[in-house]
Image (cartoon, rainbow, N blue to C red):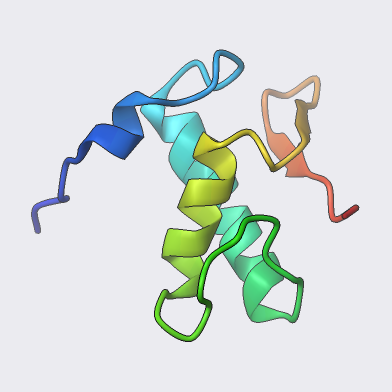
Length: 79
């Protein structure tokens, strides 16, 4: 399965030090959106899936996170 590569994945914020961290954060945020969290960016949620919305939020720096001692990421659900 090939992953589409577009220019948005290259524009990550400086705190995102790898594409793997980007994907993990977007996946966790996507779960929050699927459970009812509101998007933090202006986007038509009827036209875009939660995974795409979450990815854009992470890229734009709208998702706050911190790493734990074991290197895992935790996202904040605060709005």
